[in-house]
Length: 223
Image (cartoon, rainbow, N blue to C red):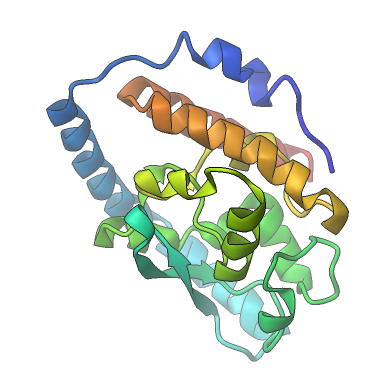
């Protein structure tokens, strides 16, 4: 498991304290509403990309294109999350706690989509529906949530805010760590989530969005 101790693009948590600022509640609510509008525009803009991925998917796999699963959201309320399916049909139950990128359960196309995090793009629909927002703790499988809640003190506090499409941990800690590193991985992720929850602001959201964009571009260039 690789942990970027300097955090992506050189922003450790300590330096993020200088970015976070107090944003009036009404202004932040307006910001969240604008994010739903932005998600709608982004979803429309990505339709041609979805079409290309769908064609590639159908050439390699006859299973359903989209995958949905129940996750916990704000205040623990459950909702259905949408993703592009990256695993073979029927493998979800066997990988309830997460899947390594190298797992044989992940399709060849799925590995590419996961690396670039494009498989998460359908969650723009969750943002439009109000289940999620753009920046916030990542919604995780229920089995993993149960495991982490039992082993990480205060883990349920991540549900005091809306789950997000991207987060500090999402872009600063490599996905799919070895199983014996899972708790250590999530301790680091949870640290980043708590920092965001305590310092939510428009400037913090903008930083996370820009860092995520740079992360995806970097992955594209390194392919």
